[in-house]
Image (cartoon, rainbow over all chains, first blue to last red; front, side, top):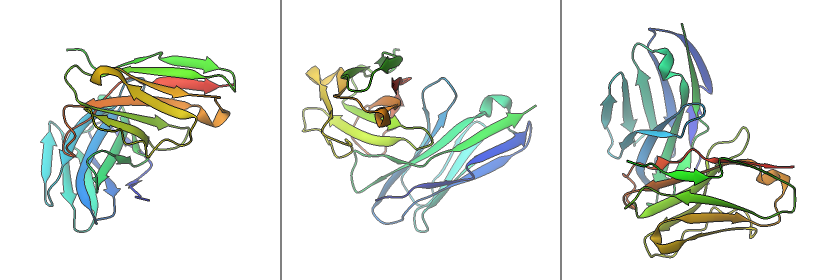
Length: 112
Length: 115
């Protein structure tokens, strides 16, 4: 059974703070890693899909890195804003193009 | 354009009843996925459809669960003889291809409550 772990489970930061969280996964049979943002009462929204070791992706104030050899990805948010408050989900494809195995998410709350 | 549409948004039913959940994917998307999130758990894969290929049913938790996709578009997830542990948010997603590098586009989900 593939185990995708995210930490921390939840995080409270002040507006303007920069923050980061981690997704860990088994490095064998890796195909791709996805990051999604899930705001309350909305549907999960795709942020990044990364496939290559050393990949770095950026979207506005949010960026992500990938290390497939050691099995982790970091998501960074620079200058957090209240609208960044959401659960950030990491998911991994291994061995098959069909299934995504999700972590339990990091719940971020940005306070004014 | 229209996103993934799911219905109903909420469903409350009695234990033992059958329920049908519907998903209308983004037009032209060939891949369709069903997931569920039980309380305190992560998103759990249930089933995957890709074009005309046989579906990957490996995530269905029991034979009370089934799904079909008609005409390569709309999908229905059916749960027979519902149990309380079936209470969860059921999410549908679609993508434009089957590759692992394709982002998935999610619907708003159906919140299912079994009394």
